[in-house]
Image 1: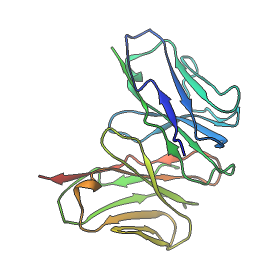
Image 2: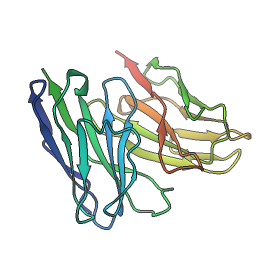
Image 3: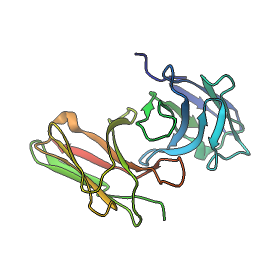
Length: 115
Length: 111
């Protein structure tokens, strides 16, 4: 079974530039998550989708971050304009259970460096 | 509030020594999940605990859920170099969907 796919693995941009990350979850997983993980910290949820609907985006900085999952499968996360403090690894995860009680399967992550 | 406190932040052990990390909450946990993240890697699910006083074992790893469901622990017996990484606990409040993560405990094997 293929895992969660993410791209790009690494991205270096200057502040005020924009960047987009892509995620393809495990086939059949209805729930998709985007997490931000700053070095030395635990993952912080940015947004959670159930199929193509948003379940929780309370911690998404909506003035600069946006995410979509138009067909209920793959998803993109965009940052525009980027700030220095956005340097982090952006992790995509998916889970099978609709009731949100099961394990999360993570992708390898996209490491963003903002200069 | 909803946060989980994970201690210690780091633990240095000699290979072969035991390792324990603790996850504490001021409120009752409906469940607790444990993940391992290798250096440069992504979190990988280890286990989920649901029942009060539950104890689960995976080879050298022992997971416990407190009787009051306010704390949990992960104990590794006779650590090996493959155990190196950061161990996270994560709680899911019954009131919403979001997983709330601890800050993690980094296991470091002394050379």
